[in-house]
Image 1 (tube, rainbow, N blue to C red):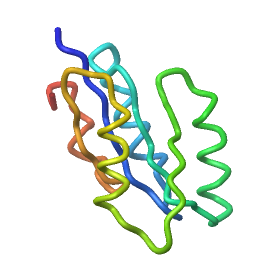
Image 2 (image 1 turned 180 degrees about the horizontal axis):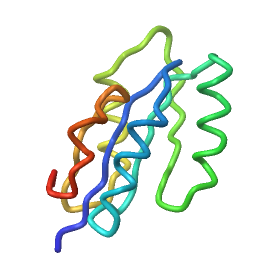
Image 3 (image 1 turned 60 degrees about the horizontal axis):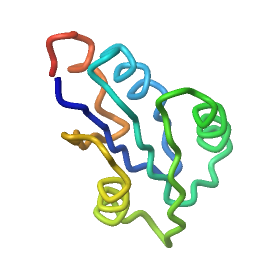
Image 4 (image 1 turned 135 degrees about the vertical axis):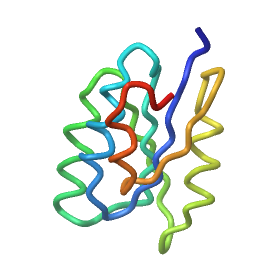
Length: 102
């Protein structure tokens, strides 16, 4: 089975729901790459800190002024070592509830 990484760009947004949904995919998923554009929102900073300790999740810091989704996605893609890459946003959760999603 080909390996799969997921790239999620984020800055000052809640991403727990998205990450929880993705983790349900189990063995199909190699790594979740969260590309943070220098978040300062306390809830986001705490969430990123907790997620950094979770196996299979990498937090990639890319300090940027504003939010440049394309730059964050490209940075995550460049860091991926998987055969396939899924690009997600932190607000995408509901369609991942089914294990048949991928």
